[in-house]
Amino acid sequence: MDGKADTLKQIWVFNGNRNHFPSAVFSERRLAEAWIEKHGLQGTLTAYPLDVGVYDYAIQEDRFTPKKEDHKTPEFIANFSSAAQEHYHFESEKD
Image (cartoon, rainbow, N blue to C red; front, side, top):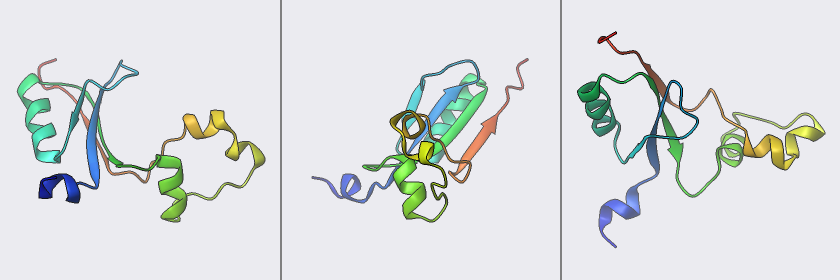
């Protein structure tokens, strides 16, 4: 493996404002921002940890503590997102 793959700890995922699915994934924030700017996009760019779910990561980092039994259900875990994740909102100036 090359050194970069070994050191990559997070990825950057872009979701358009009206899209439930990502439209791009980047290894570096600067690459994502250049692509967003190039196309004048609106949406959210979020950092995601690699090789661990956001739910587990938030617990590991003491950013979330399950307080209710339903916080441990598959439905809750599958839909979990954390406001503590580094993220940025973009609005198009082309509108």
